[in-house]
Image (cartoon, rainbow, N blue to C red):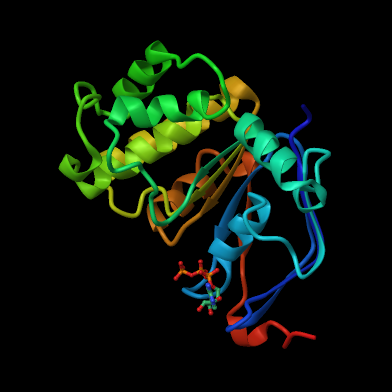
Length: 228
Ligand SMILES: Nc1ncnc2c1ncn2[C@@H]1O[C@H](COP(=O)(O)OP(=O)(O)OP(=O)(O)O)[C@@H](O)[C@H]1O
């Protein structure tokens, strides 16, 4: 798939909240997107629109050749499971399942055979070797964050969307996570979309890897137009 993300005329209005408007964007194949902007500027909303978890109030969001909001819910779920990894800000690890069982879920829910070797490989890359049998409540916040990332990467998605993926990590772990994301993206020809306040990511992305990244800074909410 020729990974590319494009949105135009995109708006989202919360029923009990603000009306957000997003400037048009075309991300060509081969580029990743760094989403920045102050708290409340709409980064998480934009990621949720890209992941098809929210449907636009107006306009279009297209990943590859697919406008997720135009698909029926079942098709949308199937497309998402096959093509998209999403690490939300509030992690949704299943509390009753071990780390390994959490990592098997993306396969089981799609009726596929789990890949324990892939799980072990990702856990090792993320400095989590030996934690496969742990339940999420026995992980540190940073460890849980890396397990959520591993889960998002399990099925080698074409699109990897992550909301503050390094927020709770020390410098070494943050560097490890960014490296893994970039390596996974290169191996899978995948597109990364990272929303972050983390200066360490912004600096790294602007420096060594500048050509591969587009940086989009969302304006403060009061600059967005009021809704219809
Ligand atoms: N469920 C909701 N209902 C009403 N308003 C909401 C809801 N979720 C978010 N908002 C509002 O929408 C705006 C954008 O929120 P969003 O979470 O997308 O911003 P953000 O840039 O990701 O913020 P942060 O960096 O703090 O995570 C904020 O003003 C927020 O208060």
